[in-house]
Length: 489
Image 1 (cartoon, rainbow, N blue to C red):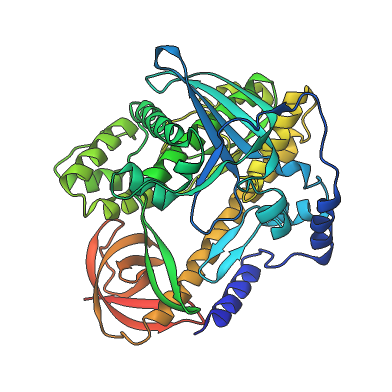
Image 2: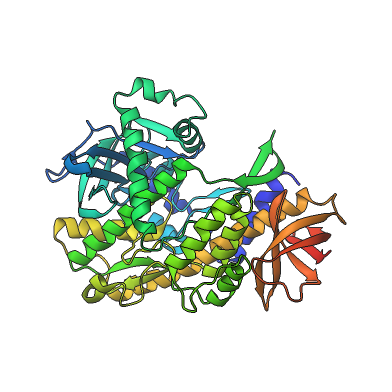
C-alpha cells in the first residue's frame, strides 16, 4: 500500500463516519478572502508585542494556537499569560468556513495526513501564531502562587508577536540535561529564563492538581513513520517534560476561562469526565498489585496507586496507564447554564482525571470548534455584550461536538489499523505480547507494541478484560477493511 491508497481509505472512513473530508469551494473562497480583511483597530486591544512570547509544539506543527510568557512576582508568585490565536476575527459566524467547522467540530489526525477543521490558508497561515508575526489574540492572565494556586485571573484581547517557535523534543532534552539548548536561546534575550520559569511554574500547577487527585498517567500513542513517502513503522509517540509543561499551562488557562465566563454570568461549554463506571475493574487491577482501593471512586487513592507503580515498574507503567485511561472513559462536552455555571461541581460537570471542577476547552481554536465557540463567548464577555449563543444552541453544540469527536477518533483508529494491517501482512502466524484495551459485547481488543497498533481477538478471548496481558497470534489482516485479527496463543 502506498500513501495514496491510505489517503483513499481515510477519505472513505471520514464519509462513512459522517465527517466532511474536503471543504466546499465557497469555504475555500471565503478563507482566501480573509487575506484582504483590514486589521481590527480597537483601543481596548492591548499592545503586548514587546513581551518574550514563545511557542512549544511538535516539529512539524504549522497551526500554532497559543503562546505564553511568564513573570516572577514577589513572595514566590508568578504572572502567567497565555495568548490564544483570535481565530474568530477570520471566521465569521454563520459563514461557509464556520459551517464546515461546526459540522466536523475537530481536525482529524490520521496516518494518511490531517483533515483540518479550518482551511489551511487560515489554520496554518492567517490564524496561526507563527514566529515573527504580529497576531491578534485573546489573553488569559493568571497569578499563580508558589503552591500552584491560581489566586487571580483575567481575560482580555491583545496584539502579540511570537519570538521563538520551539519544539517539544529539543526543549525537553535540554531541560533534562541530555542535549544542548535550542538555538533560539542564544538569539532571543530572556528566552532561557522564560523556559526555566515556565518549567518551575508547570511543576507547581501540576503539584496543586495532584494534591486534589489529578491522575499521574503516562499514555503513549502511535506515530506513523514514513521513509521516501512509504509507511515503514508505527512507533510510540512518548510524552516528555516539555509536553507536560504545555499541558499544565493549558489546563490552568482552560480553568480560568470557565471561571471567567461564570463570573460574567454567561452560559458556557464545559469539558467534563464523569466518575468511572468501571471503578470495580480499576480496583481489581490495583488489587493485582496488592493495593486496595476504596469501594467508591477516589481520585486521590487512585493517583497514589499510580504514582507508586510508576516508581516500582517504569517499563510497565505505560500499559497500566493505558488500561486505567480506557476504564475511565472519554471526556464529553456539556452546556453549563448561566445560572448554574458557577456550580459546575454540583451539576456533575467536573473533570475526574484532571481534578478540576471548572474546565472549558479554549486554547486550540484552530483545531477544535468548542474552543472557537468559547472564544466568541469570551470576547462577548470582555466587551460586555450579550452571549452570541443561546443556552439551547450551546446544548446542541455540546452534543454534536461529543458525537463528532467520537467519530473522528474512530476514523483515526480505522486508518491506523489499515496502516498496521499493511505493515503486518507478511507476519501471519507470529506471536505478540499484548495488553487488553477493550472488552465488551462488540468484541475484545488488544494492543501490541511493535508495530504499536490494536486488533481484535476473535478466538480465545473468553475471560479477558481491560488491563490483562496476553500472548496473541496474528491470524489475518485486511488493510482495505482495517481488520487485524488475533487469537489467544
